[in-house]
Image (cartoon, rainbow, N blue to C red; front, side):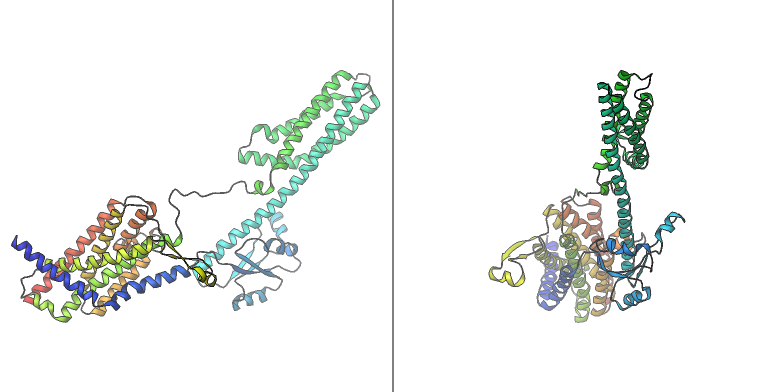
Length: 531
């Protein structure tokens, strides 16, 4: 019991010492906490998650058939294309591009029709840009693909609309044929052979024209049915068979007034023809009723997330807290033993009845307590969303309320959150102690701490998903405490789920490993000093 109490007294002395050392350096605290926080806050406020608008000039070769069509298509393709006019001077447009006056030059093909019709190839729009950023160059290529696809859809829509216009004339022709057939039937019923013959000839003219006009239009409807799995009753096979049946019935009519003409039989046949024509009108009306935009683009997507919806700032907030806490703990840990060596207190350890474990326990406790307080403050700022009314100041800044905090949702359990924060601080302090015990000066310690911070920014999944890194590079990611903590906190706070036991255990294990390494290094230094 006495040994345990002495251990507690010795460890608590280091705990008190570190707490007072921290409180005596408010500028260091402000630099380590407020500095990175304000930088990340400014970045978050200024970052725009929007696709850039490209100022675009179209170059159309003189005499190109597309010259009259470019402005019609280009001026309303979308918000990301800022149409700056068309010209025939390619060199002049490229000079504007190099001067930075525009962002994109789109060179139209000279004779798109001949390329497509006679050469069987796609006509090419050539896009010139002046980007040195590979990501922005990729965006230009993606931009070109999206907008050329839109142009293709519009051209196909125009073709479809022409087919639908033709289908309207078919519908009118079918109605005319049905009316003539009905008039012929009525004339036969009255015994008016002369009128029946006139209506029959008019019907035959309508039927011939109807067959001629229908061939191209029903192909379009047939393709729609086949592609989208349409009902066979509405397919063009039914239309074709209906036309054939009408033709067969028309052949059976004979000529009104002939010696072998049977009025009763032909009245029945004419009635069947009317029914077939009514069916044909209905089938063609199906095509007319479909919007050409739907025919060209029959599918669209709607996204539904099973995860809670979050804003961009809310998504990055847990990762930012992880970065700040890790950087704080690593930096304080990295400076602690360097400062002890500079003050000469390490030499006192060898004549004192104190062990490396007692030194580490006391210092760990101090830094964990301080890190916990900072974590509580940052978390309060993150999850709070208090609306402060501004009264008369609202007209000056454009809003009537000021939101204090980020309003990040806390969907999970606070105990899980606390466990992850403790594991992060424990591992980060241990990493800082290891750095402190392998460097010679405080400047080296700060440099190593900055290397850890930069590595965490790029490799821990804060701003780039780990899946975008090559597998062997991800080994660097999984050697950083921040990588585990970012995923764990996002799972707890944003998804409202329990943390991964494997990730949490690995983070704790990393902290234990760093503690053991620091204990061995400190023990060796104390023995070396004693020798």
